[in-house]
Length: 487
Image (cartoon, rainbow, N blue to C red; front, side, top):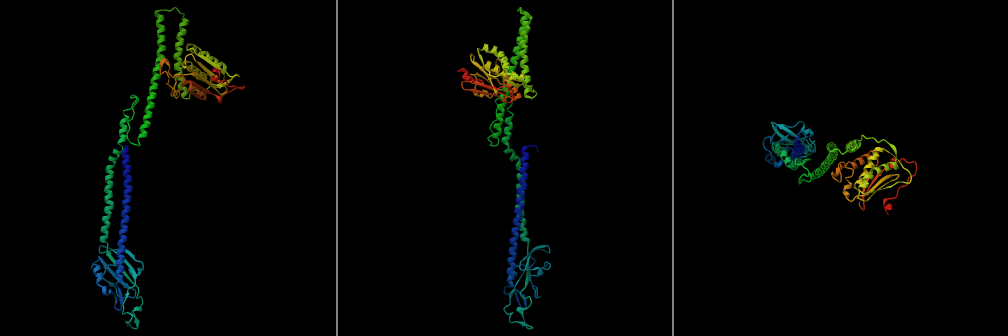
């Protein structure tokens, strides 16, 4: 069964048939056993009452003064019959004569009653036989035959009685009980099996409503959420799916911002090239060919840098870029990066304060990846620091720290740092949000943890930890904290 309702209905039907059917069979067995027990008890009680009326006198067995009672108790046919035999060989007392006896019933009779089912001329009988002591004749002690007392004759106290009664009424009752306990539950089970698919479909209606609601959401319909179903079991599913939808909307919006920023960046550079060539053709500026080629090369280099950054980020995220470990002299390395950021710092009236350790430091790292990490971090600090402020850069034997004032940042922005396509500028001025993503991926490839922290006074602190990869031949002393230097 491919439908969920069909599977549930099948399982419910199977469980109902097995459980209720088994319970009905068990109840029928218990009721039948109880009815047979009660019938046997009644049959035994009648047999004992009949045995109490039997007298054994000089004339043999007799029913005494109450001889008419058994004839009123028992019918004159096979519906009820009894027989009494004693071990002294006296005559068989039978009223009415039974049509058949079980074989050797007298020999197997004991003090405990024995029950058996008989079939006499097509009629089912229930028989019980046992041994008892008949009531002695009051005149037996004074009556003598050949000098032997009747009361002391051989086996005078041992008699066997068999009592039989028809099972027709009992069998009818048992059949009626079988019909009640088996046929009615079977009919109920049939109705349950017929109604189960409909009831299961009604029970799964909230799930069907949820499926209909899911058709109304998707990437092309941002902001849409699943409606509450009012079902306790489905609420976690609805909540979790809505959280996924919110994350999907955020990712789609971020990708769209990235696409816009990337398109703007490339379109701007291509427009610059087109404009430069078009103006020089129509209105020659008189500049030398080298100057024009240098400007065209700068624009092409910026385009190449953007595309190369995307390709490198893809390779880093896919684990295809393996670090090329080499010793890197930190003094010369940082000096080159500071010199490269000087243009941005002058444009924004920033001061780059560098705190070097007292002893030279050599770091075992991949120069290209380290350049991506520190270059992007320092470039971001100079690009987004408050105008006229100071960017602090220091390193020691365990880490490098870059600090700058960031008045536009909020605590919730820190969690977005390093995410691809995210930019606080949201695509303005060609910021694609690749810088921190590249820095994070390159640091991860080298095994250097990168952390961001927004401290009191809107100071952004970025720390690059390289303790495990440090290679230095001399002792290293940490630099002074920026707060002490500023004081």
